[in-house]
Amino acid sequence: MTKKLCLFTIPLIAALGVGCQTSTSQEAANSNTPANQAQPGPDNSEITTAVDANGTRTETRTFKNNPRISKVVVTTHDGKKTVKVTSPSGEEKVVDTTEDVLHATGDKVADAAGFVADKSEDVAGETKDKTKDVVDKSKDIGDKVVDKSKDVGGKAVDTSKTVGEKGVEGAKKVGTETVKGAKKAGSAVKKVIP
Image (tube, rainbow, N blue to C red; front, side, top):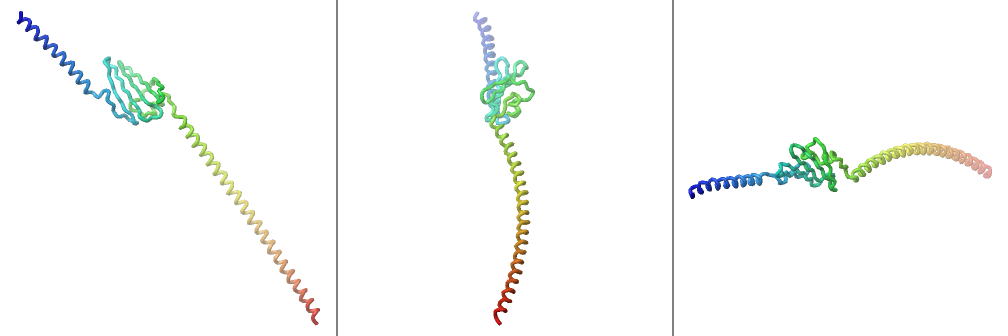
């Protein structure tokens, strides 16, 4: 009986040893995979991958400083992909896209989710447009001022020519009157002196 018990116990212990060894090998293989370790991704992001006991694969891409998007989670189960996008404010949307959201830019993913850009960017854009309008109007006003100053300058030149001509005519008249006066005074002096 002892022989039978030993013959029966030895294979049983061997089977248990093999079973434990297989379990330990799987745990070792799972711990060596890069799952749950952050890998650097494009557009200043990190990508982590995890596979649960049911075979569901979850890939999470976390953006470090994108103002429109904070996280993308791609869950694959039985060949079906679900893409969930999260905004910095915590709003979540399920996105139906053919885009590779794990490698696309954050702005493309945010556009696919319908997350709009920050309103301050819109205000900055409008301000820039308004500034262009003001600059254009200033150029128009500057051109008009230059044209008016040319007109005023031309009139001033014309007026100064007229004034100059009249001044010359006046000076000539005064000169001839002075000569006439001097002749009269000279003849009067001759009459007084014998």
